[in-house]
Length: 227
Image (cartoon, rainbow, N blue to C red):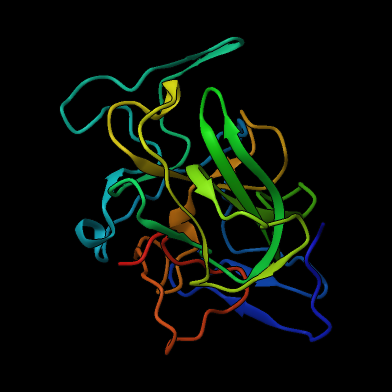
């Protein structure tokens, strides 16, 4: 269920991207593309911010784990060698929070392969590159135990607990509990991810923790775990 605001709100991320976002109308063009000419997402990475405190253990676009082993995930229709989200390693049972204001897009309680998922629609849209139509962005938190009663269409606010980190009891979670955090522009799992690092509250590449005293403009995000 798409999120719509009655108020006209807009914001522009500072820095080289000058990525402008809006709630109504739900899209604006940005200064530089988020995809290359081949349609592959550009990688920025978390360059600053409390990465250790947030538990960031695998950044977007990484091709190797911290121990040097190649990143390789085999799915029925493809082999993934570049990380398509950000992993935040936390103890099982640690809270998982909404990284933005929006509405719950969908909830999956416990998939046999990857565990639970909560997705939240932001209400902001981006034009991935010139010539493409604007697309509404949403976020997913995977490998979590969603709160009971959380339902599609429900309004949530940044910092609100939406679940807890799941135990490492599903094949795709691996050996360590963590939240796989993805930012998407459409429903195609394989092609529609973008680097979340373009969208932090404090600016591109600056991982941001939730702080109720700091305003969170539309289209910006904070980490999906308290830090």
